[in-house]
Amino acid sequence: MVNEEAVLNKLEIETRQRNISWSVNSLPFNQPSDERLIGRIYVCPFGNDYLRIYRYEYRYFTDVDEYTWIEEIRLELVDHSGNQKWIFSKNRKIGDIYNLAQYYAENIGSIFDNFLKQ
Image (cartoon, rainbow, N blue to C red; front, top):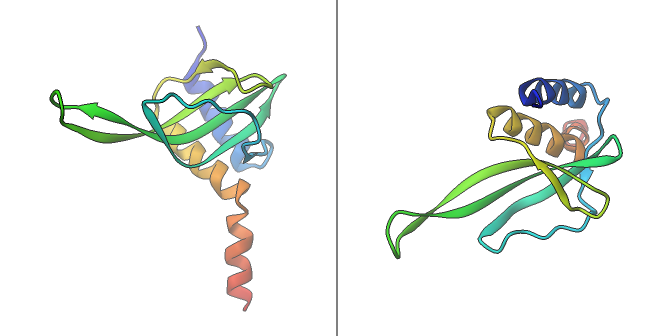
């Protein structure tokens, strides 16, 4: 089996060091009908495939007609057509990776640097 913890640790380090470059998603994306996307989707090349990370929410039913929305972050391995090949297990590290992907893909550092120079 894959040591996901080791993969996530290395992925976080490589992203932080800018050895992995995340961008806003341009791959096809078919979201399950029982989920709602929150924000943007980010992707990065990963071997012959891509990693895709995004925030979403789903209904958690507490009774027949009562539910609450639960927010999650999903990291998955996808092919060039956006077809899912693997979903990483839930792990707090995925949230850290999402934040880094968003920071670098959206050029947040440059935006705030420019503001501070004004």
